Image 1 (cartoon, helix red, strand yellow):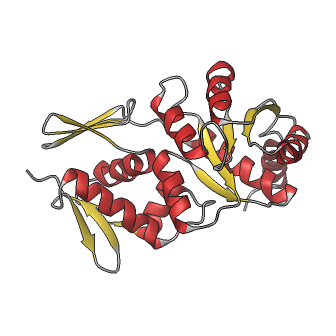
Image 2 (cartoon, helix red, strand yellow):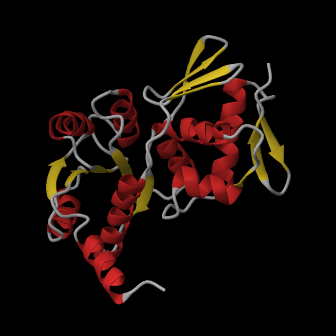
Length: 244
């Protein structure tokens, strides 16, 4: 059982997790920006705001925020395209991104994750829950362990730094979540990863997604890599087999 001192230390660390962090808020509605800014600034974070995607990309490159909260429906450039461009740039590809939007349909969540989002937060959202979700994202970033930069198998090579997959020397560009899913399966060829393993590792425990999201990503990977690489273990999960 953890001591009172350790519990107190953990609570203090949690309270300080937003202190001095840089958060970029992107929304075309000024009242939402004011609501988000007020509550996040109270936690000691430095907040930047943008009202469209083009402005957000420019600010992200200049300020290098720790987290971007990004609306989907915006003028100039919507959130999906903004996220895609942020992931394609070497300057911004590793920034944590969460969509904050009123759109709750499955297809919009899948589109967001395909674009490279780390989380998907529905609005309206209460201030305490907003701060809790933001802290969870920042903790996930802090605790992420450094990955091997490249994985080479018989038929596939994965370059983690550039988010690129080579199949028979042909380059395949994958959206971030497809890439992370493939990297997980390929990390131990032949191992069966359960759906819970996949959801926790790729989407995180704080993100609510359904089994359909995993199925869609698996189907897309099979279309790009060939149907022989990823096997379904009925009622359990999936495994990767490296066969020519």
